[in-house]
Image (tube, rainbow over the protein chains, first blue to last red):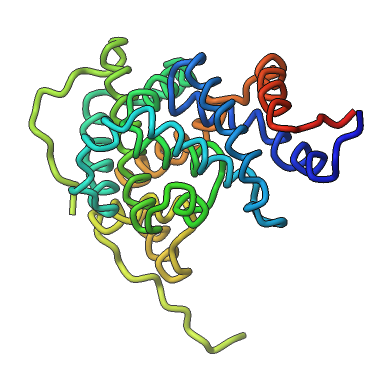
Length: 197
Length: 91
């Protein structure tokens, strides 16, 4: 049977993005079976609303938006509970530097050469609250711009920036904790100190 | 020889350099700000260490989440559910 032009275009632009959508869904859900259900629902919704998709737009971004909305409906409670009121992009960067200084004093050294980085990063990303994880996945894994991520997440660009910076800071912190657990760096014994100047 | 004097970038504090970390790594600073940050990390080992570490982590993140190797079975499920909506697969 021949596909209609509509379905052929759907194949070429939407089904072609399946691996990226699967990766995105798995990073949101942490559970392969749930992620597969999310992806299936995403494609069903995409097919039903295919007429609303504007030719020339980024299909992957459109699918990420649908997928995240489907996911949030599964996890409405988490979306409401996470307090994002203290987000401040510069302070997240600053705090990350302070924590890095502390980890260095505790023996950080060549940490990234001494741990299995892939599993550590996967675990750290999985532990992030969804709002931060989504920002990190879109920008740092999928390579989306801040502006595109803002479109998917339906928040202002400044919010993407502050969530992304917090995600990176929390990720960095998780790597340090992983290294402490592995006996590579000493646990922090002193209160956090500021940067030098 | 040009008689235009090139001014050194303004001195930046560690705090300011730390605050600019991720904007710098994401290429979202003005040329002037990049020069100021670069000037700082060229001379400050503490900040340079964190910039290096953060840059390495950002480089490693995509590789930690590779694309799924085979979505064939899931694709089959999706296609089956789309067919119920009137979809016909390309040959």
